[in-house]
Image (cartoon, rainbow, N blue to C red):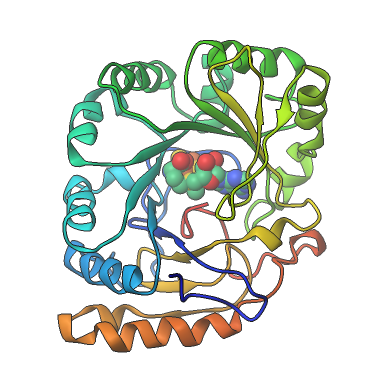
Amino acid sequence: MNILKDSFGRRFSYIRLSISDVCNFKCGYCLPDGYKIDKSDNRTFITKEEIGRLAKALSELGVSKIRLTGGEPTVRKDFLDIIKIIKKNSGIKKTVITTNGYHLDRIADDLNKSGLDGINISIDSLDPKTFRKITGHDRLNEILEGIKKLQKLNFKNIKVNAVLLRGVNDKEEDFKSWANFIKNNQIDFRYIELMQTGDNLDYFNQYHVSANKFTNYLNNNNWVIQTFGKDAGPSKNYINPEYKGKFGVIAPYSKDFCKSCNRLRITAKGDLRLCLFGNTGINIRHLMQRDDQTEELKDLILKQLNYKKESHYLEIGETGLTKNLSTTGG
Ligand code: SAM
Ligand code: SF4
């Protein structure tokens, strides 16, 4: 039974855990100048032993799924060990990752062996030039090869996410190329509406477009909205009998988006964040140091939930502590 519940009746069975702020890409909406060390904060990233203890405490609080994210989670050398530790001892049922997929072709085999339960890969465009324009890297091919390798290994639960950007990847031909991609491919593809963060106001003003642009395409092309289970989260999924894959839309500015929130976030330096945005969040790392601290750690997380607000208030430009999403994992 899930015991993580806030004062608005939402239950939290899902944690997004950032394991590194470091990223090797330069996505225009996130880290346009690449990763820069924050010299005002000399704390190191949480260790795999700390993560093991945290995961156990979370599972005892009813959390069933942990998503490893970043920054880029796979830049950490002990990344596969982290998956294995969570899988082995914690009681967490599903361990998944979000990655930019930059060397997916080389790590597909190890990922498959690690016991990972699912992977979300960020690919903003299937056109190599547009891909490079957005991410600063020419690596689309190795990512697509990596996906093929995972599929050959019979790895299930592959999702692809793209941030919807006005004039860049929001044309009907972009939507059609994704439709082609999922036609005979059991992959879920989702567009995420661009969110404003502390750092990206100019970019946001230039490239933000409502997710309705994609939703209208889906409605006009025989895609039918799928009804959700109780833990479905914020993605609205669409199915079409002629396609093996599904489409999805994550529209953070839509009415009632926060009502289905089922997740909390923990940063790579051990801060609990109750929302992707907002000003609430405290460090909980001091309670990940010894096995006998589990009860205290659970207690602190439970108490913090009382401070979770009803909404992110993004629609009024409130971005809170979030300079960019590389620290909170998107
Ligand atoms: N580096 C990994 C990746 O790119 O998948 C994991 C971290 S990244 C912060 C997680 C997700 O957040 C990615 O899908 C990325 O496209 C998305 N993201 C980053 N900044 C965003 C923004 N301002 N608005 C919407 N999505 C954003
Ligand atoms: Fe890196 Fe992911 Fe941010 Fe792109 S979205 S810069 S890949 S952390």
